[in-house]
Image (cartoon, rainbow, N blue to C red; front, side, top):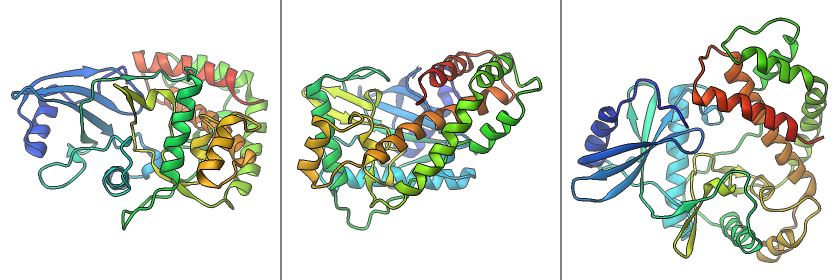
Length: 328
């Protein structure tokens, strides 16, 4: 996130880190990276480094429809990440550090939570970058191990394949004939959506048809977003980060990021490792779902009350890119 969370200061974060994790903060620097969460690089007075994440409980609709439900869903996801690393023995899972009371998240006011992770010296990928064949194979192996993992008592949430803001998207499609007054980017967003309205309606209908097929597939534990920006190269190791999207779903929820349409070497590698063939319809469904979900999020953001910020400028650019690249 390019903008800092409204109403959260470095002092607020330091107080939560001190009370929750007994981290005596010497320096905290906001890191405008990633999407969906806010991040700080933290150094304590003993010289140790930490990576602190602040989540807005109003912006994670896949975890629940109230702040309390989202906080519970986020805690469940982080507990599962801990179990995947410690119980299932998956070394590539970057799991959070427990607070002194054993919790994996700590509240910051009414609207936010804080999670703390070990700081790793490494380089993350960029969203949309092309992985080298060797790295694609490594990601396939990681996903195969994740999908075959066995957990002892750790609850795994179901991933619901609905779109985050579908009702808002459908409302927006019905209001293309009148001005949008949410902010400086509302009208440009309306113009972009109007140019693609017919195709979006077709894609929503196709999404619904494919959803019926995918719902019959057996679920596994999935990460949800194993794209290059969630891959951290630390020395000779590759870590999979950002586990707030973890959930039970067909494996293709993860695989579409690394398996091409029609299969190919990565699909064969996955099947050899798991004994499970890759379902092509499910790959298509999850590829389509990603585009439509992003579309619904950006339309919701740009129709809502907003000002010109780095994040809203990014949302408008991302809406244009999403519309241009959405499946035909």
